[in-house]
Amino acid sequence: MTTSNTTDQSTLASINPFDGSVVGDVTVTPGDQVPSVVNRARQAQPAWGALSLDQRRDVLKSLGKLIEDRADEFARLITQEMGKPIKEAQGEVAATVGRLAHELDAIVEALSPEKLDDGTTQSTIYYDPFGVCACITPWNFPLMMPHWLVLPALMAGNAVVLKPSEESPVVAQLYVDLLNQLLPKDVLQVVHGRDDQGKALVASDVDLICFTGSRETGKHIMAAASDGLKRVILELGSKDPLIVLEDADVQAAAQFAAANSFRNAGQVCVSTERVYIPKSIEKPFMDELLKASSQIKVGNGLDESNTLGPMVNATQRDHVLNQINHAIADGATVAFGHDGHHDNFVVPTVLTGITHDMDIARTETFGPVACVITFDNEEQAVTLANDTEFGLGAVVFGEPEHAQRVARRLSAGMIGINKSVGGACGAPWVGARQSGYGYHASRDGHRQFCQPRVVSFAL
Image (cartoon, rainbow, N blue to C red; front, side, top):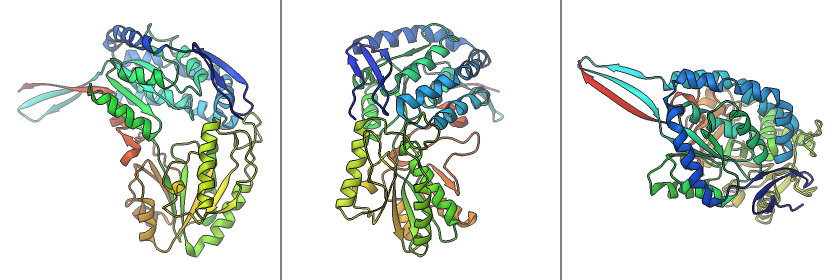
């Protein structure tokens, strides 16, 4: 199924990847009007930035109730706009609401002034707003991703211009509309459109650019921002490995591999894209992986019995299928799936016989594909896992102390042991290598939305 989400030059339609129907539409922001949007943000920012952290928290704390009151609408729109199963969409909404109060308190604590005294000089470190922050967000978590960037930017006292993905503009617009019930005029504005609008926003008179998306786009943003030395926070793509050690719980490891490779049709920045298995346990692991894969039900995300929906669009579908077909042509074997792709659906696929000279082992797939690679010894597993330019997440399954020793040798920003990569409350969301530049969440992550300012006097 091939669809377009452009109805005319002034309107951007949101297309349901399941059936091609129109979910809704938004008004495109002409590229030449982006500078005036940013200028309005700059005019509105000083009064917002002059409020105390507690005052800004008091303004924003009602957002949770506003989202909760429309939780069903948000979840349904998420599924309709980008295809994920409704239960996952409901989980996205619940996570956004559930963490809000804690995040607000954590940001207040992180950005409160600090005093230092060495006996001769007393200094106060203030965390002041940059001014205007551009937030450019992806489609795979159309509520959570804008929220992760917009909330700390606003709490830091910045005005924000949000440019959401053209694939999921309706969810983003609803989020902005709810926030603007609370905020002063022009403190938060939205720019809708495609590449031209994103480029215009990056080129405009903003002070900070926060972007989540592909490595290639991140490189272009960094290059464009360099002329004005604009600050950037970039969360980029990855090629996350899973290493299964000989002392691992094989069933648990295989179930995790299936869940984390196929969740949201593999359209997650920390999806497992490479699975490394000792040759000694290859058969029992593969038996469990194929069993778990066979239990996945593909179909319309609004049907609660389905656990995997369509790819977001035909372009993403074609990218995934091309990678699979090239891998097969290069000698990979299909252990499960591959047959049955239709419309925007890519069925869960397990490939074996993968080697590191294949594109599918090196380039981000962002689709429901588990690539299984065997190894002879632990040293080889670590070398293979690190054989990438990416480094967002990684997972190790094994006896905990053993797995932790292996984890410390991996070049990723976040490493899960017998679990996903997400850290404890307060941990940063951080990538290494070409998967990130700067980071967010955590005390230090919140501070990246600020300009530290040190005021000192002699004692």
